[in-house]
Figure (spheres, rainbow, N blue to C red):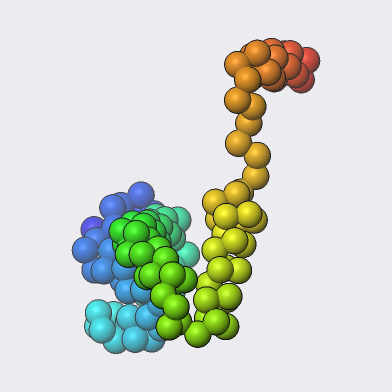
Length: 141
């Protein structure tokens, strides 16, 4: 039996999982209903189910993680291209300057510098841990 508003505990069917994947890809609801040959009202009901919403969210999270992994794999190549363009004297000065400023921005205030890392002094780390424990003890009641 398919999960429905009448039976919200039943597992999602393959069709419901396929619908969740298509919605997560950004397909319009009308297209999803037509592709899967289901009434749009039934799909609307599914979209109210917590398990269906969670399945859509899972698909989106998986797609984002896949994209992050693919971008990480390309980062070395991209950095090589930037390095070559910066060092190549035939690269127009404006492009070299723009690249240099973007690299400096990343190193100084961009993705590589997101917030404090924490102390590199073991004694300071221990003191912070003691402080955190004391705070938790005081706020526990």
